Image (cartoon, one colour):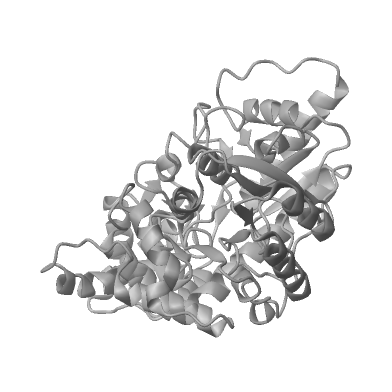
Length: 487
């Protein structure tokens, strides 16, 4: 059955589109809506007559707007059925082959990456950044610490959260993973120990290992952090750093309270361990009222703390921007580590992010609303189709950490991939193996795709659990346990 969108809904989404000329303004507004997913691909658009009435424009305006959409690849006419949305290059245009497994076809639902499509308003930020760009073209374009305008906005955001920060304490990087790599290079030497949570974000552990450090796992339980055990681990191993995710921990979704952060800060001081707090998910508070009542940054409780931030989860992964916030005394050290990797992040994207941060109060609530819909859809689908799987519903973040009745996570995800849905099994997030009783499922796809993905996961689980002692077939290097990166 084809999905449809009503004329009134299109009128609401397009809003006060430019009307000089009206047909181009309408076409451009629809292109943006289709491109960022607010009107999905394969949706039947309203008839020209219905949309004419809803928008209070002439029939010619809608007819010409639809013609522009078809000519630009954002719509197609189906004889006897109407006009349907498409995207140039097909739906798989938005996935890189290094992140997508080798499964072919447009029917694959990729839940390996916990990242959403771009939020509304991104196109406008790119347009405004284009207007600002000429002012930077007279220089070399290298900003190892970042474009000053963006540094200032990031510093102001920390000030607003109760952590006094000056722009010179901020280094803008090509994503949070690049930030973690720079920190690891700057603050660890081969053989030094770094405490990391388990489960945790696997790409960062690879970056720390690449710097030559030795990983010391500290378990994060289904109910959260055991701070006494974490303090004991630091006391016994004398680590150089502790890499932690206190804000909607990836993959468990836990949020560390202010009281816990204060207790942890004291333990870090006693063990002389520097904490690296990854705040990639910090802006993704989904519980009512929580966005305005989030705990203060971990750096407010721990002297010398290093903070990693990211635009990928709160705005859009395509910006490829992150940052490091550290004490002024550590910035030269970070610069020396950074110039061995690159000389700065792209100027244009930094201008885009600066504009988005200026409009954060407008952009982020809409983004969070989309995530709430996805989370609630996923929770309901799992309750209906996989009632034996257990999970806690986090107050923010991007994914559910699901516990299976048996340790069949890897086998289930392998079977799910054969059925056209890609998710990451628990062992991907384990520092020293194990966790095969878990699967991470992001809620970042469209509601329809989430429901279909759960149906396929349920079929895969039924197939695997029916013969739990059957060895899992080799995966030939494909999928979430092979070369594919997990985001």
